[in-house]
Length: 223
Image 1: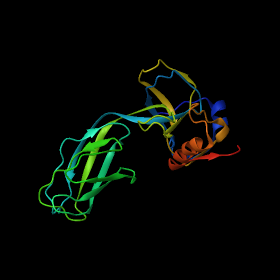
Image 2: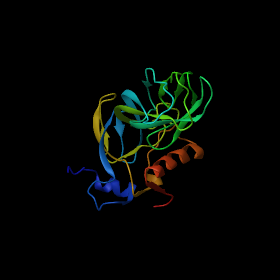
Image 3: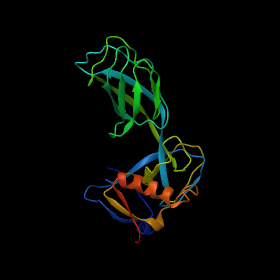
């Protein structure tokens, strides 16, 4: 396994605890592509999907015979397998719930009516009526690219997805590999985080801390 080199002195200000039993378990090298060009240790990055495609497959045992039309994938869709489950039934209709690869509900939709939420857009056709529990899986493929997390973004990068582990200057809008922390168990110092200026209220900062916590990265008040 390749060892991810970082600035040890600067990292000690940011990283207070990190699971190290498995080499680089909490770290990865990701592709950054952003309008920014300067990144400091502790910069909070978000991620978005590019080149997204998707295909749907009916669950075995479905009663209903409706099918998917073209599925459009845009940010902030996630790479992985989504589930679609029929939750209520009606003649030539019915409603369904869409759940993302992390188990988070994306939203509800109606059979034979266009659905567009969370970066997925599609229509489930009506044929033989569905019954409750019928469903589909949607497999989304694509490439994640990372950028500085901006609170006003709508492409998924408004949430924290990684912390920069090396000071780096790169050409703007150029795909560049960068060492980052992407998961815990780990704890970091709140004062060492570098947030975009758009995260300027306590509530906005709390969203960032919560999304880091969801990755297993605890933000310490004083460290």
